Length: 403
Ligand SMILES: [Zn+2]
Ligand SMILES: [Zn+2]
Picture (cartoon, rainbow, N blue to C red):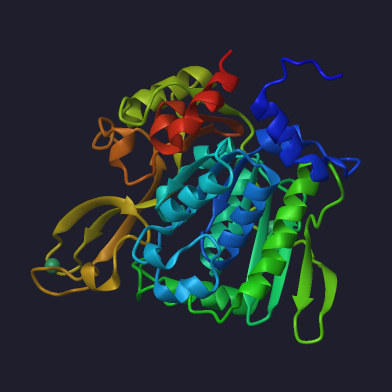
């Protein structure tokens, strides 16, 4: 006889996952405890999240900038007709918690390239992406490598699709797979002076709910295998061709010049938030930690520092992410000349920047700053920003890293 004190909710949970537990290697606790970052809440993201909820993943952050349009309803199981106009991230979070009330889903209506700090990537045990553009994939790939987190990509078009897994430290990576055509498409997005040339026109790829279901299913199954230490699609691609139901696995080739192959060596969590530190205060700490005054503090990404007019020489200070300024805004308001973009990639002790707070740079919250002197390197993750970004998911994450 089982002990009569067994809690009803535990019994229900036991029952809920009883068919999954029949799989010999299955570990429901691993799945429950995993922290998953889902980027994209469109056709693929919906399928990914639906699968994660059914499998019992409890800790989810979902990032998507968009709002629901009527055309999304044909491919998104978590959207209702009444959701048109709502944030995709908010909507899937609500739907997820309706499927699995024990879960905590943190929705971020955000641009992953501009608004998500490296700390968010580092929080996750694994990253699942359902995106429609190469630029965001390339960015995720570089971030995932820096903080040493696996990511699983999916791509769909028509009734065909591909799923692949990338593990930092194990090239080939996503960037290694990019060919000349991919780079040409990537280059077209940005003008030569780093201002955004045109509205985002990707995202009108023809897709069906059936192919998103197939590829989203493979992605989440890869995630489950990865968590259990099973063989995965690491550095390989699963290609599904829907017309004849043929599928095969491709091997990619490592690019020795790939810029993504870099893992931050020494990431230290510091309790401060980005509003509590100036550039000089953080650089002073790094100088003490690295034992030299010649420290360079690198940002996680370049920012647009100022726009400078070549005609009247007027300067406009910006401190915004690259990609945040449209091409037409680049013209000088006085004389219409196209201004030159000055970017900033770090801080070397310039007096005019010293007193600037870390939250006044155009960098996202919960980011990581890397201090460097020669080969010596130390990175600081601003854990004080975690509650603002992770919401209710921040608390367990912080207590785990406490000494
Ligand atoms: Zn690579
Ligand atoms: Zn001017």
